Length: 216
Image (cartoon, rainbow, N blue to C red; front, side, top):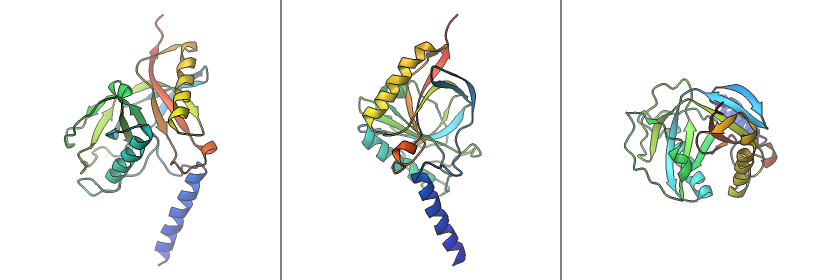
């Protein structure tokens, strides 16, 4: 009885923490900070594994459906019925961004039909760094992939995660980038670190874009 009460208390505590933007024990992909320029943080990420799904829907609907599919995978909807630790951030990219965010599919995953189009959205969970051999998804719409190492410029913001707010943050990143010593090497992608119920002013959201050093 006592262990069950302790477990329930832990769930309630973690849920309360997430409301105020406290990500207790949530792993994030490791990175090296190369500097800060024009309000943007320049980071270097090593290659990492991710679970990804593509959804034919608008931005908000795709986020909800994609999260549901990926949550099914990490909460046991996989070949080993294993529970996989949740990490942050959750990444979202649209059709154009997907073309510049491709990784290498891990051979053991089930085939999945890849759709494209103006309303196609990609939702991605980064897997825990200790998970070297992820179990295959039961849902054929989910694939396991290796995201290659990359250098990114990151704009951090709080508040709304509605499409217009994300578009405004993306515009600020792109407006700031020319004042740095870096140039875009791909398209922006959105990273969400907190669940939707987190108080908006305490949310951590980021727009990241792959970059390379300016010539000369």
